[in-house]
Amino acid sequence: MRALSDFLWHERDVLETVLHRLETEQALLETGRTRRLPRAAREVDTALEQLSTAELARAAEAAAATQVLGLPATASLLTIAGTAPVPWGDIFLDHRAAMRELLDQIVVLDDGRRATITAVGGVDMGTMAQADAELTDAVIELELDRLSRTAADNRGVPLRQGLLKFLA
Image 1 (cartoon, rainbow, N blue to C red):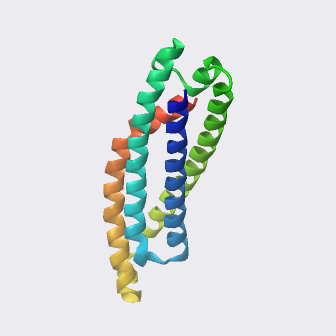
Image 2: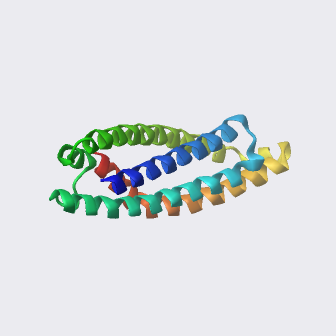
């Protein structure tokens, strides 16, 4: 149980990092400081890769814990918490609540980020080029990053769905 709790702490830390990186990227978008936007997008991607790695490690540790508890390997954290001995049940419920809150914040922020990127990407590039060539270059690079992130997001969908299912 301790090993699972340790992995959950680690995963919570990674979720905090993802949230921070998304907040940073969103702030850059909202303030129009696009020069650093490509770097911020890469940092979000790196944090998402760390989350994927953490999810895989947590899934393996959760499977070990479910085996000890006599539960199916696909048991949710809520089920594990309900079966785990004292004090682990309460600890797992605390992890679950904190992780669900972080995920909710990430989803809301990521939806806002996508809307902002769409708005920036929809600006007439000719007008932007006349106004500010550096901004145009940043938007083009942002669009390339968006395309690569879309591919990365598509690869990460099963992992995110796994985390949501685990926290159900």
